[in-house]
Length: 113
Length: 114
Image (tube, rainbow over all chains, first blue to last red; front, side, top):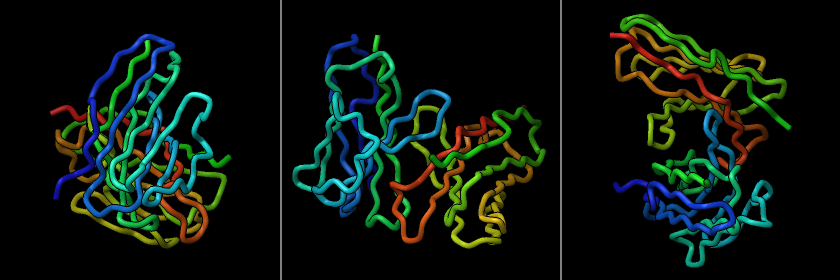
């Protein structure tokens, strides 16, 4: 079974630019998560989707971050405008249902200069 | 908010040695998970614990859910070079919670000398 796919793997942008990340979850997985992992830290949840609806976005900095999962499958996470402190690995994870432990993708490493 | 204290921060051991790391919290958790993350990869689930006092093994790995529900440990026996990586604990409070309620520790970086 194919795993969680993320792209791009790496991205370098200047501060105040915008950037978007893409995630394709495991086929059939209704629950999708975006995490932010700053160097030296564990992952921190940004947003959780159930199908195409948002379940939890309490830790998403909504002034600059947005995410969508329009058809309940693929998802995109956008940052606009980026700040230096947004440099991190952005991980996508999916599970068949919220109570089941999720599988993580390889992540996108973002560097803001 | 809830926080996890994971220790040690890093370990440098000889191949063949046993390894022990732990996580503690001031809050009660109802689930403890242990992950391993290799460079450039996402975390991979190693062991999941759902019951206080539970002791679970996965090959050379053994993890326990503390009886107070505020701590968990992970042991690796007879370490090998491929055990190198960062190990994260994660806890979830509340019953029937989702992955989204997970709190992660800061990780233990394991280095193994052949």
